[in-house]
Amino acid sequence: MDHRPQVSHDLTLARAALDRGEMSQAARHLAGALPHAPTLPEIHELLSRLAARADGALDLFPLEPHAPAGRVAAHAHLLAAAGRPEEGLPLLAAASGHTPGVDWAGVPWVSDPVLGDRIDPDALARTVMRLCTAVGDPAPETAATPLRPYLTVVRHTVAAHGEHAMLLGAGSALARRLGEARLAVDWATRGARSRPSKLGEIWLGYAYRSAGRIPEALAALRRAVTYDPDDLSVYADVAATLADLGRLEEALDWTDRAMERDPMYDCVVHTAHRLRYRADGDVAHLISLADYIRDHPDDTHEHTDLADCCRNTPWLNGVPPGLARLRPGRAPVNAEPSADAPDRLLRVASGAWAHPPAAYDRALGLVLVEPWELLALLGDPAITEAEQPGAPEIWACLGLLHHGSQEPWLDSGRRRLLLGLLDADVDRVSQAALFALITYAWVDPGARADVAAVVAGRFAETAGGPFARAVAELALITPELDRATRELAAATIRVPVVPRQRRRSYLLRWLRK
Image (cartoon, rainbow, N blue to C red; front, side, top):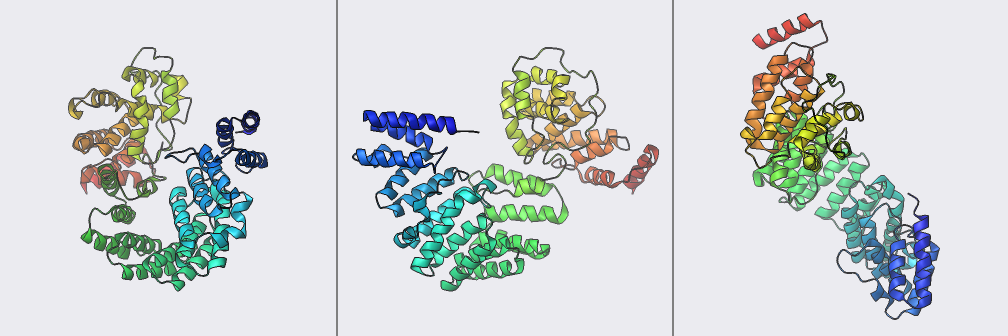
């Protein structure tokens, strides 16, 4: 998006306000322009004019909680202009943490070696660690260039203050996030050598992992455990690293050891379920992880294990390829939905989702579309042919789950409507309805036995037929499905493509066996 007209407008208003002596108005327009053009010389020139004309110019950019990033950055620039850049840098880093893709730090005073002489290395280490937490690991691709000036500050500060272990480790963490693996290893190695510690070995282990040097990463993380055998997050890191080396049994042993100490520790629980799923492919591990996430919303930090395990798996991560065709003329309700109902459905009808609970949450917006409208949209060609095949049907069925959610599941209208969509041959609508039922079983353990029975029955109806594989894929992601049905579903997916009568006899022989 081109923000130049808005920036030009803000600068015109800021100049006019300065000329009238309206300093607060000028400050407001400058703070508004900064996020769109943080390195524009004209903005910094006007900030200098404001500082020269206003007593207490810093007070024009107050730093109350949740202050806009533009105001925070303006305060930082005024501190630097007043000869206090070491006080301004943490504020600028806070703005970068808020919007990492904006070039907040691409200004001369940040890259000036003088800042490295003035700033306290402990304070800079804390600033860099907060920045790392805010931008994620790895940082977004769009943030690589805007965040690079902070690496320059670390270089200058290390040059001025010597081998400061904490700063080298924090700098390594930032370098790793920005794709600078060699620099990350160099700084972490120097930091661990300067002051051996658990944290130093963890930073070194992460740096080695980012560089693809997995055995060295494992050695560093094992050394970290010796410093603090009670830090279970390191156990999880060791397990993940062993798994990267293909040593899955050893990895699971580390998670078991950690869970003996604390079976509810979030990092270990996430890692254990991910590795167990990797070991045997049983979706029960992912369902248990989803249950843990639901019951423990206050984890120490964000985890992506569930989404990572669901990636590229039919139904777990999005609309699968090869959905059944939509039977023409299928319209559960012969009525005209409201004018905004199609738009509301198409706004959420993405072809991908992180995992079933995420799909359930995303469908919450469809509570504004009446159930009969969702049913009517299932037969509207303008909707069902507008997006990726199957996506509108899937989201319409997921939307039904949010209507009458206060009703007990077995007697609920949402269950009755979805079961009604199964009363026909397999097509996109019936597949979507079955997925919605399964998704609800993921988020409500009380519905699992019922949904598992429905899925088992549906699979029995289609076994040996042309749609057996389609239903088998859904069966394999169903919570608490009985073992016999699950094994037959797995065999159905593995069976080679053969004539229909031979396929049916193959499956019957397998089932008898």
